[in-house]
Length: 272
Length: 272
Image (cartoon, one colour):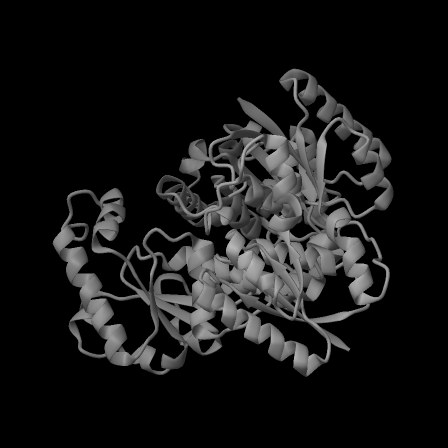
């Protein structure tokens, strides 16, 4: 049986949904039907939300679960009168935080989710621009402006990782694809030796790389398992010889690859 | 005085950090020094974490705040013996969820954060690839494969929004920049009329657009306030005439723009 779950917030719902998904993932046997109610920032909108909760409750013949990050105490009180079973982040933690910090919370709608501030917003866009402009070995004359340069063979996951690092950590991350010529050498290509301290290698199980490449160019030498095995082992040899830290991206999400890179490099950007 | 805050998790720390930042943003007068302890998934690593908490507590002469999303009950118990003040997502909500759902949680390290599953992982990478390949009006012959096509004048925020929608919602989002020629016409360019139902407009305060363009080409006609005013009003006229929903991106974060687009279009992708 499917259980209805609503995420409600005065802003984007991203926090409420992150919390809800994290908790519900601990019940893998159950099926949930999720919906979002973002920008619920007035009494009128909250009453609409309560109607929606009541409708779902009647339909399902059981109360929906509601994950809330409403900052306004008045709206939180109203939500508690709904037909849903409410899990409220602020109710659960805020009182205790006020005691610990020795001051009352200053509820501000939207601030909970890190409303844009102009300067930082620009930084992120600059970081994305940098990632796009230096993608796939382009414009390597700009590597001196990079926080990080990801190095790896074609299809090893460099581009999504650079974009994620830009989007969420405002890092200037470039990426350089190791070519066959590079892999046949015993040392790094000269354009990388200038910025060796900022290099980070990505690698992958050859079988997985083979799958990815088959999707791009089925049956090609480029995609063959032999070629993938050779490239991966040559790339890893190069990383080892040059002392470049590296990570296997097989079966890892972009979030996980990004977090592990931060951990291994010691870069400490603020999460967006 | 700065207060130390630690985020601890058996996986990426993204959930713990989202929760912590959301709560701490309600105390805008205070300054926090944040650190992350991701991948704390063994007793040994947890003991290291407790040492770090103790060190910060001694240095600060006050206990650090610790936001935790550890799934393993044993590690949660150990963390509670640390010198920090622990705010634990699972302790706070899981018992009640178990009662409501009528079954025990099945703690699984990492699952809390949506560990990659191969098929979905690929979808996201495909979505990012689509966004990159159709960025800035490129390859409009592929618009039939798009979930959404963002339309707007140069620098109105299309690219970051497309990348965010791809990264977080696996949406295939293309973007098309309205040129002066397009803006001088009274109707949409023909290549857009084929996919009108999937168009979404981005607009911006002319003053803000002017600032952004000045950074790119200072003193140019392209960046002049008059030109920005004209382009924005022509674009909005076009959106209105064609019945295209649109949104002002000024002072909005990429997250917020993305969420509002989903709300306005009724697209209901699962958050990644």
